[in-house]
Image (tube, rainbow, N blue to C red):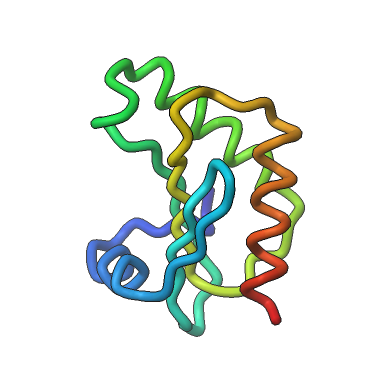
Length: 100
């Protein structure tokens, strides 16, 4: 949890950066010296906190062990909860696009 984005200044810089869209995850990123990440599920799509927390846990687990190249915000955009394998595959594909 020490690599998470917490300050509003960092959050603003990430959301003003570039965007890459996958099947179930949208990634916003900015070029920065620090390598931190943010995981979120929108309240408008997921009204129940139980569902949002589950999605965020799945995304954090799928990020674990993957090298994060920049300051990144992972936003879950799908209308249904996908499995851990599907989310992990989607994130890996998007991160490959960002690195090159």
